[in-house]
Picture 1 (cartoon, helix red, strand yellow):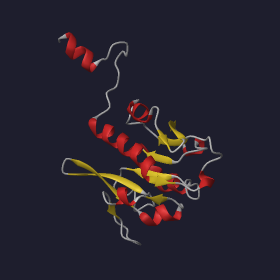
Picture 2 (cartoon, one colour):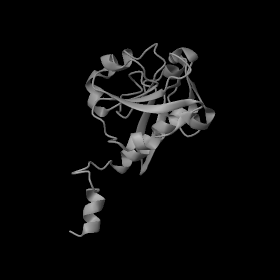
Picture 3 (cartoon, helix red, strand yellow):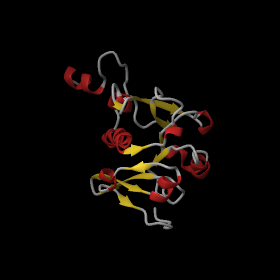
Picture 4 (tube, helix red, strand yellow):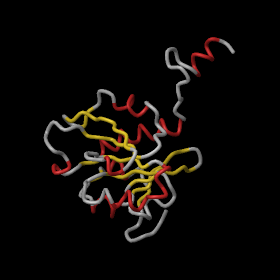
Length: 178
């Protein structure tokens, strides 16, 4: 194996670094953009200096790529930070929560714990929006798309920009669509 290939697979000083699959690189960028195109009520923040937190619940598919995407970024004057949680009980402050596929078995409980907290919930399993999740990633051909459950978004008192909604499939009100 040539040195260039080894460095591409195992960057210098990283040991056996985990490479984030392209799918999760795209999803990480989406999560960053959600921060830019969603507005939270002031009560979702403890103060004017609090970070806007993107959380990952469960097995993290992003590696450090999500951290790289948001490093140095802000939403208005709020720095954007990434936190990882093993259990929903650990979540004290979070504004966007990606529920990893590993959390699908407890999906309803995990989503129920986020109600009334002003958290934009994001997932990727087929039943995510049916279970009350707000934004679901899905693949159409070779593209990653999003489906938005506006009922759940409005119930959390969040406002999603029309710029984001133009790119999304909208779950019809009252629908039990995947």
